[in-house]
Length: 353
Image (cartoon, rainbow, N blue to C red; front, top):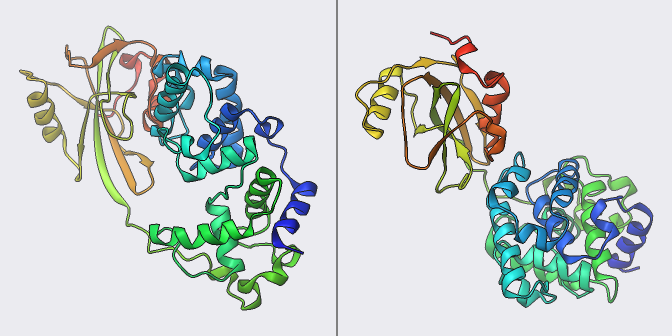
């Protein structure tokens, strides 16, 4: 039996019960695929339900405020995904008369939609013959065919794409693609794969040659870069000063004024920086957290220190608020808020001198 038929047979008996599988609505499939990028399935289900509850259709997303979209996205990270969702929803709504594109060629042109997402949408929603390549599929193909090309190199993609295309069945393209992804997640797992219960192990070159644990191949991981963030927590009559981020991975989110550097700074260095940046005559600071609050991104470890002041301060893109939850913020900001924010009155928080 062909591998594709084996996968479809397995999928019919073992497919996961996922909320987006009850529909062929391209808007909802699109949302689910974007959310699941860089996201664990359990977390993805929660955020999908939360997102669809707030923005049940294209119009509701396209006519929303970007701030509200980013607030719903908080905790998922990789915020460019949310910004691209919002941009593309507006484009489809206003420029395409709310008609969701049905072809791979049209979808691939949209902001935030790449080969994988376009292939998933057209195969699942419109039954078009396009293979998907995600981490699960890369892993399955590399093991079955014993392909040792590193999966994280762009020039390897053609090799895997060709094999993925050859494996496609002649029908049920959406089910097959979803079946492959489920099979990779549940059977052909990254660690401790269930080869003994794998229905295609007799066709798997890596299994035959005892190379399963060595595949897929990846290039050497990048070293973690450490950055130091010093945040200025300004309290004026129990209102906190926050600013809108204008670029970078947290673009259009909000945070306290910050100094970013590649080395740890002492109090005098932090004071000197903010005096110059905001043209101040004086600045009295007290440290809030003696132990840095850490936040890890893909290849960056942020160690953050928060400094408290009651100096009167106005900055460009800044505003005062008593309720941080009204503004989208990074997980790092939430870590601080959960530990120190309390009743939103910093004068009542015991500072570390």
